[in-house]
Image 1: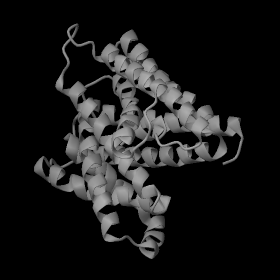
Image 2: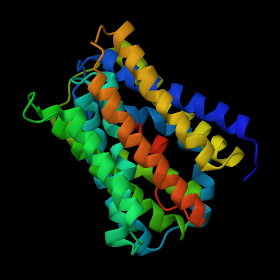
Image 3: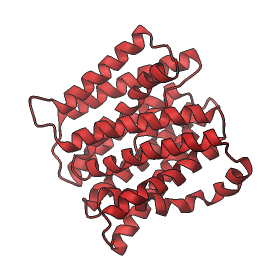
Length: 297
């Protein structure tokens, strides 16, 4: 990793713009395509970006355990992607973005339970702060917590499970295999769910879903460049801009009301994520994936 903070911040800003763009396009579709089908088409159309990875993946190969682990990751990620598309069609863009920050916090808890990571008092405090942030956003008892909110909680849980599996496999295979197998297994996992609700999409909707695939792929590439150029402690705070941009997109494009509780809750969750990332960087063995990796299916 290089030590060029400005370059890292630049790439992370582009990452945030790509991921907010994904959310905006999915919101624009407005549920015209069923959630499972939209998610499936996003991955099918995105397979074109997998072409350069095919030969390296075939050369590397997988053992039986690798197939099982990636298959499991494909299942949990498929479920999470479907519920994300469902929630994005109902909730404000800023609210979905804020609740997505929860996934890295759940990864921290999962790493302690399943991977033997030490959950020190300071990290527990950060997790508690994040949970308070979730309560601030949802405000149970003060407003109705709908199915879309529960869907986002489920999404964060599934994404966290997927990243824990990726962490285990990253120690066994190349990053190309980790990324490529996700695209393949999620496409397969989404296929039966998409067929169950299939409606013939218009060419315009297919075009928009290809834009989603392109933006998501670009976002993951720029995120990788950001981590190569600067430490996560430099790039992580920049992710708060995603919440700012998501709020502006919702306000200016979709006429969604400005919700101060969403901003406050999202800030609390992201603050906890940044602190956890900083502590992991201090210990020189980051296990919790950076927040941007959880923003977009």
